[in-house]
Length: 373
Image 1: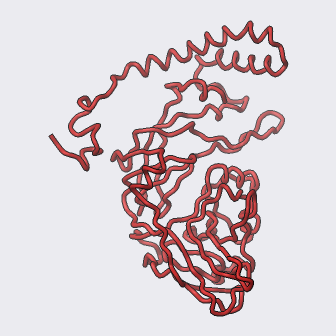
Image 2: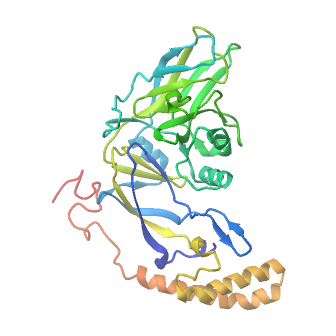
Image 3: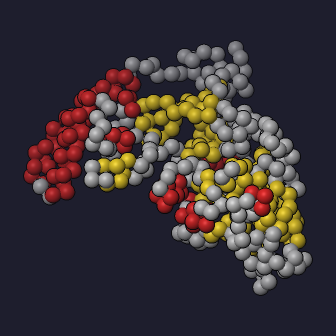
């Protein structure tokens, strides 16, 4: 696990590619499946890649890649769509059925969406907690109505990021807040499960009275493509005549023209309206070779890995004298391993604004958005 932190090897540089899903704007860095060491010792979920970097292509078109949220959201601001009243309390917890007044008006069954209500998201650490609790790696989580009662509290509050808020007041004047959970209903992944937002670490709670297994009686869900909320039950009684308000982010869908990498999550704007091929550079994490029944991917690293393991053992056992004796040999192997990558990196010419062809290296990408000479 120290290798990727100590040296960025050319042999570990690879390409990560995947197809987008219509309406999904956020994608986590993928994780290795749970592995088992000798003696059935579980090896936890690790990221497949150490990180992402330029260039990034969407259907073969290079797009800007950013890691600074301020720059990205200055270009693509998340403007909250505030809907003053979507329903009125009737002195019960529910059910309440209503449609967001800025409904995207998409059809069912779904065709290519033109507008899109952003979905709640669970980041990598939340997915790891979910996978550990449920014994299965699934991103994003798609659960049955029965499983929702345990899966929603399983994800830490700090790792779930709602995008839809439904608010009102209780009989004592306190705020009642319902959000989407970043988890989706099995059988229809356009339906997001709603929850009661709680306090850290695991205070998020499923809403009572549902959802039920019979989808004709689907409860406590929002359809992101139609803006419909089905059979919502609040955690408290909503007095008669009290306004029920809603907030969300509404975006025009299309070909993504920018990507943000932050919190191990890729965020695309515009949200994709169909499947697009995403390609970007990445460094592979060696964690996939932790199991003893798998060979080291590159043989020239064997002695480096062995000496690195030896220095860990010596440091743990407190054998300082032997550690100091072996350290020069470890450094020597690290330099030899790094030398191979240095030869590859230095074989490429350092690019300038004049070495990449017309309009490359300027403000435009692939001769789009800039001048031509």
